[in-house]
Image 1 (spheres, rainbow, N blue to C red):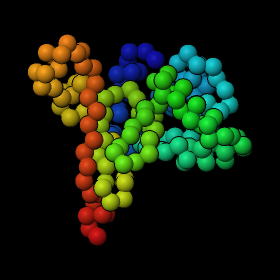
Image 2 (cartoon, rainbow, N blue to C red):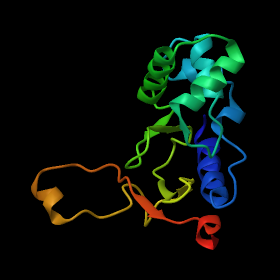
Image 3 (tube, helix red, strand yellow):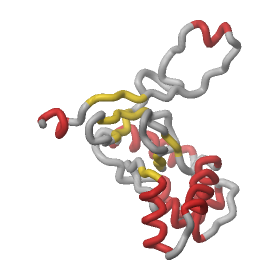
Image 4 (tube, helix red, strand yellow):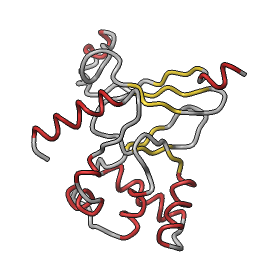
Length: 167
């Protein structure tokens, strides 16, 4: 993608994040092109797994496996795990692991956003960067003393969604 297109998508993601993401990189290129562009070999299983996760979703492995089976037929759980690992390693998916929950996967990878999790129902909402640009938060001086170069901050806020709060 060109610089103008990438800038536009980042602005659009940032602007629409509090509503609903309606345009993603996958709208601009096919799933196969995205996989090939990441350096991975294009396979039917990789295409089906990437297509199984929509913008704004945080999906567990069982849900992905069910969607893939509906799309292409029989596929083992191990194959889905392997594909998720490959797509995550290639930067096409992001893996998140909220405390006490199974691993979840999302396709929003082009920014440094965070998450808000409802303690009651488990709903997860994307939250844009807390302050400024990546890594979003300033660490204590301890990080500099330990000779770390920080490039990302991962923050999870916990609370109750409006539906659970009302109950």
